[in-house]
Length: 325
Image 1 (spheres, rainbow, N blue to C red):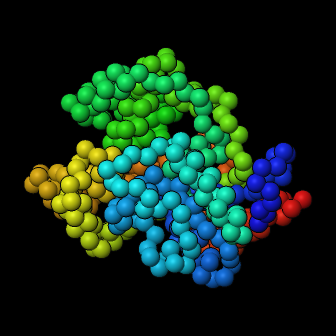
Image 2 (cartoon, rainbow, N blue to C red; image 1 turned 120 degrees about the vertical axis):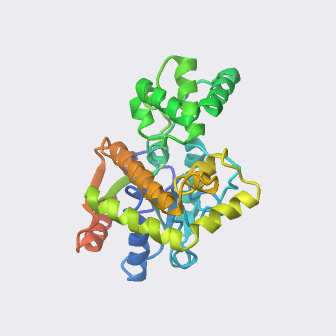
Image 3 (cartoon, rainbow, N blue to C red; image 1 turned 90 degrees about the horizontal axis):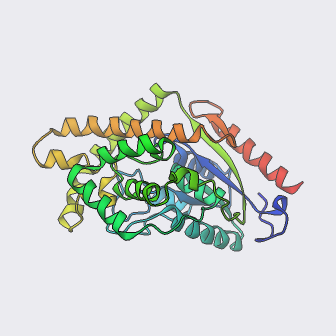
């Protein structure tokens, strides 16, 4: 794959950076790691575009790459935040561009892997100059979401800005508040601000998506959920709570973690937790695909295809060849 100069004048001379994306449970990480193990990919490093794997200690429930997988393929932007901290698409773009530059300097090839659509959009299309939102607007929305819960405000966002709402989990209080605050303060939906002349990125990105039939993906998610439970997900959640991380923190609103709140309160059983995690994960995957389908730049491959690895390697080789022309 072409690395080239970091800041050339012409777009066609920019370094080409592959993005491998797909909904949660589609097997993105396993695919890349397997291709390296097979010797079909060499000299690569993953730049993770996952808004939950950035958090330390949230390992099992975020399907974070294992130590062995990270030893096989270096993963960047994993375990970079404490669960008490917050993260944003803007910060992700700055972090990812810095990491990509470092990887290229090392003579390796960066591959962006993940499923957080807003992060990928920020990375590839840049960020719009959204005006500063008054603190009092944010504070009022924060108080409202605390008293009524995030679902009601997410429904309001769906009515005001359905495109933005499709990218946000109904429990992601931070991003719901941000989107509603921007709309209230500026009179324009956040999704419209995304289209406002963002700064051009210093790289040329190419997109490859892994998709599954919905029943197949639901089955994969259900099996992965059961495996997470068997690996000690409940113990991981209790460990986080014992160390002072609370349900109100954005990290703890992650699917796979927030469902345990009702179980620990004695309101539902562990079996019901397992079912709820699988359902909520499948719903999140559906929202991810809704977002991805609006992007005509993505080349899609069938995750269940016996020739999946061949197709991915061929696609990467073709992008490499195009970059050299």
